[in-house]
Every structure is written in C-alpha cells, then in structure tokens.
Image (cartoon, rainbow over the protein chains, first blue to last red):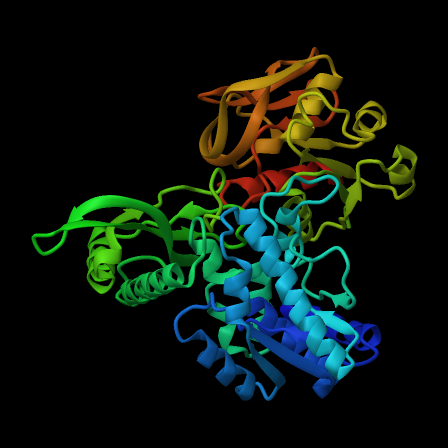
Length: 315
Length: 191
C-alpha cells in the first residue's frame, strides 16, 4: 500500500540531488502543486520560487486565496496577472484541444520569462499520473492534452522536475495529510481553469457567467454535504453550454444560455460515477443560478454520465 | 515477494494495473510490450498482465511481443481488454467490432462457481467496461467463465494452462470485486 511518509523520505533527497540550482514551481494553489511545493521547499528551501499565474480563468476569489496561501506557507513567491494575455490568446478559439495547447504554451512562456530574469534552470510541476496518461504518447491515445504535459511546447528552455508523476490524487492527498497541508481535501481544479468549463469560445463575459455558476454549485453542494444530504463528491462544478433556449422571465421572453451541473464520485479520476445529488439540492442550485444570472441563463441541466464514456470535465 | 509485471499495450489503465499490484505488495513494474521474452524470463517473474491497448489494437494489430509471451510462458498470464482479445486471436479465436460496445457500468454474470480467479466474487457483480471490440469466437481449449448482456465472452480461461482473459477492467476503482480478482490472480502466481 502507498505510504505518504515513506514517499516523502524517499523523494526529498532525490530532489536535493536533482535540483542543483534555483527552481521555479508552477503554483496553482491546488492539491498537486501545493504538495509539490512543500516537498521541493523541504529539499532546497528558498532556492525555490513559487510562481502563480492568474489566467483570468480562475474560480471566484481564487487569486486572493492563493496569495494568502503562498504567504502562509512562507514561500518565496511571484504573482503574475496574465488574464488579459490569456483572453487575447483564446479569442475566437473553440476547439478544446487548441484551447488546452494555447494555455499550456502560455504558461511555459511566462515561466521562461521569470526564469530568464531570475536565472532559474528548473521548472517543477505537480504533474500526476492521469495527466500524462490522458495526454497520450507513442502508444497511448490522447484523451485530452493536459496543459502541463500535452500542452507543453516542443521547444522549451527549462529542465522539468515532476516528483508526483506516478501518483494519483488519493495518494497525493495522503502525502498532503502527512505534510499537514490545509489543501489536502480540496477538490481538483483543472489547470486551464474555467476556459474548459465553457464550451466553445471562452470569452471574458462567458467566464464571468460560469464563474458565478461554479461558485453557486460549490457552495450549495458543500452545504448539502455538511447537512448530510449527500456524499461529498470528488469534484463538483458548472459548465456553460453556449446554446440558447427559450424561457420566460418576468412575463418577458428570455433567450439565454444553458448551464450543466456536473458532480462525480471517484478516488483517482480514472473512472467516475456521476454523483447522486438529491432533487431538493438540484432545485436550490437551479433557482439560485437562474436568479443570480438573470437573462444570461434560463435553463439548467444535470449531467448523469459516468467515466467512461464521459470524462470529468467536458473539454 | 511474488513478481508480476505489467506489459504496456498502451491502455488508459495500464498504470492502474501496476498500482493495484503494488498495493497488494507485489514486486511489479510496467514494461514495454517490445521486451523480449528472454529478458522477462531472466528476471524470474511469476506472472504477467497484458494491459488493454490503444484503440483497436486487440482487433487487428500485433501488440509487440505478446505472441511470444503467450507461446512460451509457463507462468500465469492475465489478459485485460485488448490483452484478452489478443489472447483469443493468438489461440485461434475471433475478435470483431462489438455490435453493442460497452462503456462504464455493466453487470457481469459468472458462469462457473469453481474458478480460482473468481474466488469470493458474487455470481452477479458490477464491472467497469470500455471497449469497441470483443471476442466473438472462443479459441479451442478455452472456456467461458463470465458474460454480460451484450458481450458473451467477458471472461475466459485456457482449459489446461493458466491463461486468463477479461474483457472488463478489474483494475479500476468502480469494478466491485476488482481488487479481489487481482488478489486471486496473485495467489495463482504464487503457486
């Protein structure tokens, strides 16, 4: 059985040996990159520089939370607001693979800029097993290009260090618990962020809509879990489907987009069952989203697909 | 410590097979399917898992040296999905695109009560599937161990040798008795 403590004891010296100089870690604030940061920090101390990139596709209040976390962890950190850059790069892009690749490359170019300025040679990433498995290789089909693997540009100037490559999320959580990290139970959030929760073009306007909807889904589900109305899902969020349907709001014809509610049970994301959300909870979510988003959203649907055949995120 | 390697045919769950074995304290690693049989033999392995594969590999391709393993091995082999399909083809069975492919949750029905690979597994149980092709004709010397509504050869074994094929995926979390099946396979390899 996987033992978090043993993993740490084995990994830290290896990292000390592998990273000879300064290193930069891509810090999103999720479980994987936070665990990775704590490990590398143990190994090389403040030679590690944590870089958080605000892509503009973050969850509600996330930039503030991440900043706070980096401070609490006592990290040597840089916070880069690149939202405008990301919005520009994704303008007119509808294909999910293109989106992921553009985002992956943008991340790397930003890291390279920081690295050049601060003379850093190594890039540490919190890549875990499903990231490289689903990104495909000579043998394996590409299910989706994870931004940190399949989204890496062909030429890059940083040496990659990925200490969590063989781990699945449940194992990363075990390591997080041993390290006493608060993020250990946090739900996963994709690197490309809300951009892959908007089907089609991920415009700033649509991002605002899906951000609000995600926030409502998260809060209501967490509330329901606390009241023991349902089991805690592995992941839970909203997806914006840019298909307009007819509704009626305040005696007036409405013609707005659709939101899908997605929640799944899993331990490792390699297979998933859709979560059994009670109808009363779905009802609250539906009403809150349509009321909060006015004429933008007038239809809510519930995704009841397992993986396979679906994946967790829609893109 | 029993040593069972996982032959990588490019499946999405190859690494999960490795993980399941490792969690059972098996000495295991993932090896490319181009590894020569002699090299595996030199490492004194006690068993092999032939992983699932990239799209359609079970249907028509030759997955690396899997043929050589099936021909020469004297230890147990467990073929999963494409590994199972290739096992059937190698021994003279037939594989075709499924009339009704299966993805996700399916009910497996066991057809025999005395099979060590399924010790402790209920006659009916939930398994997870992901296949476009399937074995439609059993090879000579093989018998069917389990079926589902839309796939008649979900599990098979060689009548004399310890060669097993499973269309479903025992390595994933949502297969009800997945870990039990792996435990049983490990036991077979220990003998």
